[in-house]
Length: 269
Image 1 (cartoon, rainbow, N blue to C red):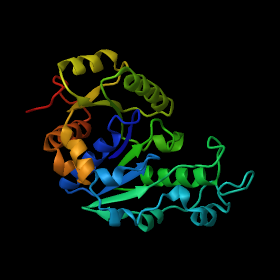
Image 2 (cartoon, rainbow, N blue to C red):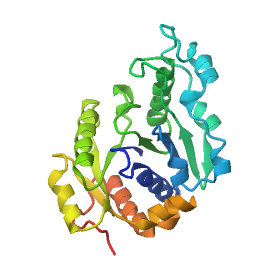
Image 3 (cartoon, helix red, strand yellow):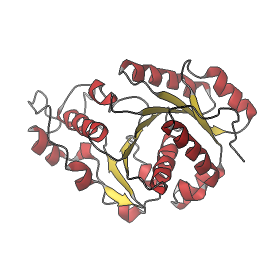
């Protein structure tokens, strides 16, 4: 299963990605987690200690590697580069493994002209194609608010595109934009996941303002344990058992190709 997760900044994309990764590992399945958000906080949500995280480096910032694989130095305007660089060895070389989860940071292009196709983008696109189309693990991709790392060639490898929302108009407006971008790429299975739901009123608001035609897989209740876990550097999976149960239901819904029972905002118990 290949899962991409997006949504407005701060809605809880990374929390959901971390919980999904731990739930799949608990099922005995190999997991490759991809941090494709410029904020790069997935390692903390997974509970990785700082000394383990220190071994991580974003692929987009590896100038020597980019030049080696593409033939062009990052940031050089007008440079010719290979469109299909070798990337199959990169996940093992530049990832770290913690509690059965392999984590890889993509990073983002930081110099001017981010919108143009450059050597960095060529390497990242080739890597994403490899991860989504050729790897056999469960791949969970924590994205920024959009589809920046996906193209038409890789979108076909996404089994589920999860758009995380919280009770709020800006969050739901962003969700509609992301869903349209995903549809433009040909992604068929787009789902909504609510987060930080405090009450029945929050649930009704999300249901009333959700983008049309996008089923909800489930809703995660607002839980102060998430904040406490962040303060302590603890895995959300260990700190918030209530959310873990909800994510298990979301996984079951994904694997059955059906939407989960969508009846209550605060979970089952």
